[in-house]
Image 1 (tube, rainbow, N blue to C red):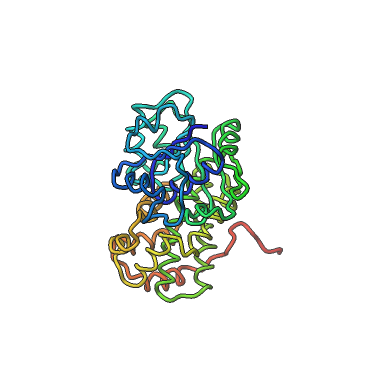
Image 2 (cartoon, rainbow, N blue to C red):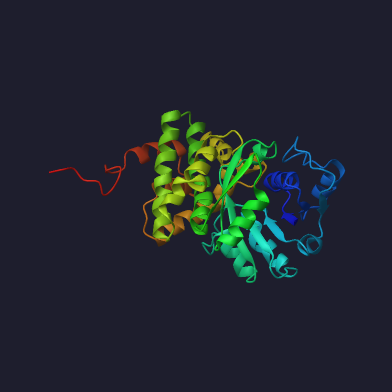
Length: 336
């Protein structure tokens, strides 16, 4: 199949490697001529994914029309803040029956739309699916065992995308809960910032476990209020992605949080990480959704206060621990 990967960051390059292993005809597009020159010269992204070599059969281009036309499947791998702008440009060349696989993670701050909703708004004829799960590019690029989930509106499309990406090291599940998958992938980045802050403050494993556990509760409560399935947040795009993003050395969100915990501003932390930190862009949207649906999300609230209001991270830990006492699982009762 002819597949074009739009975006030559670490995740786009890792997926391009996977797709070539699966014998697809792959084109990689980037808006950055220097990036494309480097890829054409070395078949390797020297800065974002060093050590992952793509075969010479891959086409690298800055020509969006060339990348879009005739491709059966488009992989939207640009960072979330650039999905709308890229989709507008893709719409000029989009052809009937093309499938777009959204692989970035985020919520648009101004509209509170998920990324597949943004793509559908800009390209109404598109059949858009979401691919998410615990899948760091550094490991996928080295073909380490990984599992993800694909969300689609119809099962036929889900199974087609499953077949395109499935490999002996890359297992793909399918689901009809697109919104739940996207919310999990977006909200976990905000919780991962908190986990990183705790690490930067010198907190221990107990703190990390508490943030992961209570974080998934916040994610699930909001998701259910928005019409998602609770089970999705117990799956790969929920607890699975949350665990890996809160704990992994590869996680840019955890690393940025760590630097903030050590005293940096969010802008200084993002400059140090040198890649888009999706959690910073999703934090305000997550809090706005919590208010819109009247859901208590204290971790998300304090992350916003630390990022944008100058609230000290060390004070947030104590404030979270000293909130009003409550029951862990609401709805359970004691026998009289």
